[in-house]
Image (cartoon, rainbow, N blue to C red; front, side, top):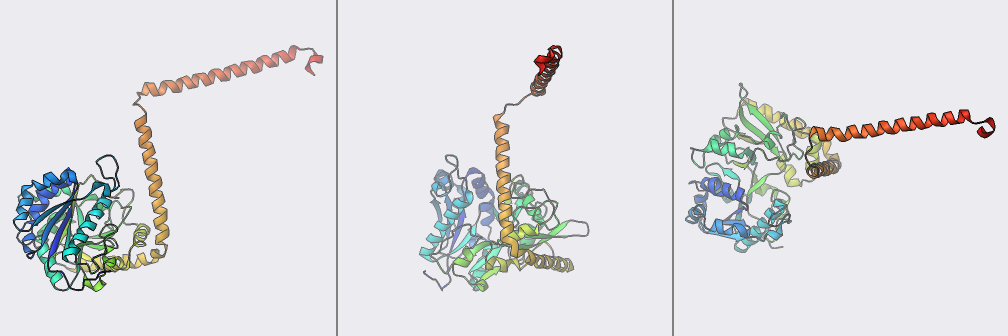
Length: 418
């Protein structure tokens, strides 16, 4: 396995994007956000901006004026990825978008290895605080070969509307203050005191509120942190699944070389998702289930479990005694989880089969619902009445036959009865 001991001096900024929904968001919101003075312009000479997409979307991206703006700062590559690399559903569609994204990232890592560049993994629905990329470069120059962040989900359309009229990238505290008003239901389902819950809790959130009940910040403990920056040592090792999984440990890094962003004042990233989109937030229970959390943790490696031990603070104001109290609560949950961890694999199997059973039941119900025509109440009642009438008639005929048979028996001579 080829090892690279020397840190990279240039960067490949990588985004995997396809489909109208995400390309619109990427071009209209994310690129202007990235073009702020302390983001993309902070990258050193020799860096590249690389967009991985499907062949059908190459013409639109190639003609984009937004990407032309990026091209004035960095060389822009639009890389076509074979859509057959994902698991095909209907013709022209990708059923498993995570498989497609993994294939894009594998190509990006392989290409970066040829020029020994570090990678900055962005998504087409990320919004960055001002100075995020500048901070990534500084942390990397300080000796860290990975920078990980907790990117909470926000309600996309509501947040974009609130962002209108502001600078494309705002300082971290201003961005956090705005984000607290537009949390996605999936983020709320991970709140320790939330009114709903999540079937697959990869993190737990503790709210910090003002005396009037307004949300002013969130303390996060996460099992799946997003690697915003990665400078692999094993450059031949490619991702086998999503990059927030086990790839960090497999690419040759030591835990001490991974910088976890624990304070949003350093940098902050949010993910924009339509509020109506369900991200395993079922809404059937309240709060975080320790057994489900243990099920997720049972498939985590030692890097992920180490990151879980360290809280991340997203705050719009100064840290005070409220944060100490919330941190103490979070430590208690970490301790409570230890009792469930030995049974995590069993919980995972049970919940997996329950989810499969529920999905099959829902698919069957949809199939039956679509197969049957819409009926009026009269059409529904009439067959029932007819069935009841026929049953009643059958009973009457049977009773009539029984009475007739008894009558015949009575009038027969005694010698015929025996």
